[in-house]
Amino acid sequence: TVDDFSDLTVAEQAKSFNEADAVIMVHGEQMTNAIFAVDGTTFVEVGCKVSSLIGNPKFMELMDSTYQAVERCTEGADGNSVCVVCDSDEDDSNFTMTAVAFENLIDGVVRSLQK
Image (tube, rainbow, N blue to C red; front, side):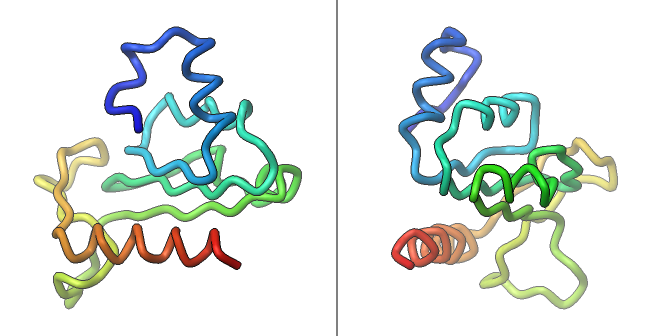
C-alpha cells in the first residue's frame, strides 16, 4: 500500500505498479505508472471527473487489463453507490466517498481478481 507516490523514486513507483494485482488511485498523473504494470492488472481511477488515457480500451486490451472510472454521484444515488460526492462543480474539486461505497468498490475489485 502506497499513500503518496510523490514520496517514491521512479524506480519505487515502477516496482509498486509492477507488483500490484490491482491499483486504486485518485485521478492524476501518477496513473501513468500503469506502463510498469503486468498483464491482467485491474485499474480503478477515482475522481469527480475522470478523463484518462489509461482508460483507453485499446491500451487495456494490449495489457489484458481492466479499467473502471469512479466519478461524481448522479442524482438519486444512495450511500451504497460506488461514486464520489464532490465539494464543488469544479472538475478537480475535493471529494468524499461513503465507507459503504468504498467497501463495495473494494469488494468488486476483489471479486474481479478471483475470476
